[in-house]
Length: 488
Image (cartoon, rainbow, N blue to C red; front, side):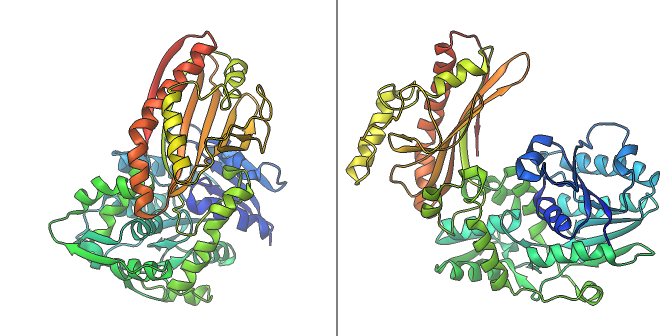
């Protein structure tokens, strides 16, 4: 039976997978996110039984209309990407939401929380916040079903992607002693099935149910088995003196998972998180994927990342994609504010390459092209279909246009020989009283050499991108307001 469902946090990892599943089942979905544009980019905007709503729970606002005609709510909000104060941010959002939830006619709320240690010795702020959020939602007086999950095996799952990056990039892993802690990983498909089937399970009182895969495993076991599926044979060496805090410091050099999220997760790895999923499995029986089966599905879905708007559905990008590439790429870029018009900036961006060059430090670009030629690349060849305009599929020297939107966006596929897959993007945003122009490189490293290449090129990237953005604005004869560097 079709129901009206509110998904709070639809732009997050689970929400972005849950919404399509609910729509396929025939439900009407009201999906919320802090950035409406990000929701629209998922291609959901033209679906009849889907309503997109911009919602920032950090803002004190009346949420009464949000619950109008809603039967079931999925609360999937967390604050791990908010920064060092994410605990208060997360709990304040939960309090604000719970207040208006209590005034509504909603029948049932499904909250996805986190597994908790049996002995409360964990110092993890992340796990504590997940538990307290559930308590706050129950204060609304509504029927709350809290599912507590551990590591989710799926493309884009932060905890899984951290392990994936470590396994793929490092032959020897020096880890904190918590690598022997146990968890119960579950496949993304299994978790989504539990979530969707809960809609039709009548609830008369609050429930807290563990989500568990078929095995209890240490993090070390998970990484060793994951490495074997990549055809690698890694060594994991636990070090007692290497604390989770120290591990979080250098984590950003190995993984491309957003730093705030990775840092929050690290704190939760220091304790055993056992799970008993028998009660949930009794209520909603299904075949639970083994660890290897879940990994296989994830690696297959990772390939779908290239078959997306991010890479322009480009066949050359798909041909070069490898299953070991992480879901989250490395990035480095520079953003500049200016009073130049979008049209003027776009006119200059389209001149890139060929005889025009790259606006700034062309000698460095030429050195890189010669380096490519020395190892058999074709970067020295000059290509420009039209000296003034670009279109999809154009070859610009060793680059290829894989996505463009007039006056707003240009994405070029990296064509030189290097250990990884990358693209270069130009983004122009109209902010009313000013415009921003952003030049940014994205890079999926291929193993340890791919990481070395990225960090070796980092100084040149930051120097060149800063110069390129300034040169673009100057060519428009416009004023430069301010700029900032961003790397991950």
